[in-house]
Image 1: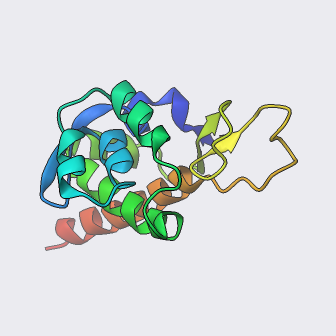
Image 2: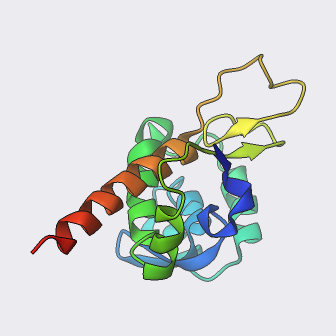
Length: 151
C-alpha cells in the first residue's frame, strides 16, 4: 500500500498542465474545482489562479453542479488521463507497480480520500476515489505501454 501523499506527483495539487473541456489548467485540482461550475467562463477563471485559490473558490460552491458527485468518477478519470500523458509523471505512476494507492487526509474528505481524524475514522464511509481512479489509470497506461512494445 502506498500513501499518495508520499509521492507529490500523484497528488491533485501537483503543478502540471491538465487539459479538460478544451481548457488547460495549471493543476488537476484547478480543473476539478472548475468542474463544480456550469459556466465555461467560470471554468476559464480557474486556468490562471493558484491551487490554493481554486480550492477556496471551489469550496464556496455548495452544492456543486447537478449530479456532480455522480459525475465525479468520470471527471476525475478524464483529468487523470490528461495529467498522465506527461511521460515523466506516467513513469512515476507506473513505478508504483500493482500497489494499492490510498489518499489519506485530515480534512474530512472521505470521497476522494480517507480521512484519518477521530471523527471520521471508522464512523463514515471512506471511498478513496482518487486512489481507485489512479489505479485504473495506471492499469490502462500499463496495458497501453505493453501493447506499444509488442512488434
